[in-house]
Length: 45
Image (cartoon, rainbow, N blue to C red; front, side, top):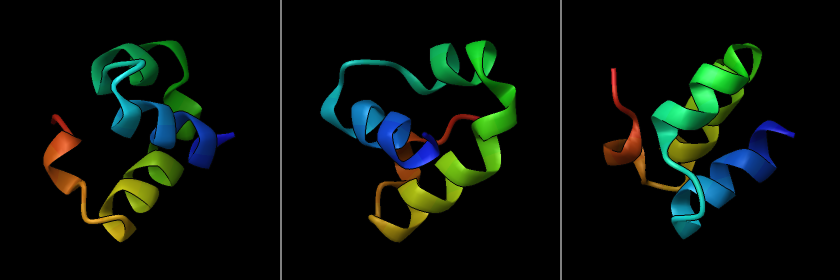
């Protein structure tokens, strides 16, 4: 689920903030996926 949501963030369907607020349990997986795909700039602290 984290990989799917991270891909949706990359695609622009969702913002990082929106997803993390709705599913904070996926944060680690999303951060890892975005970093691996060289999209760490989408990670908002």
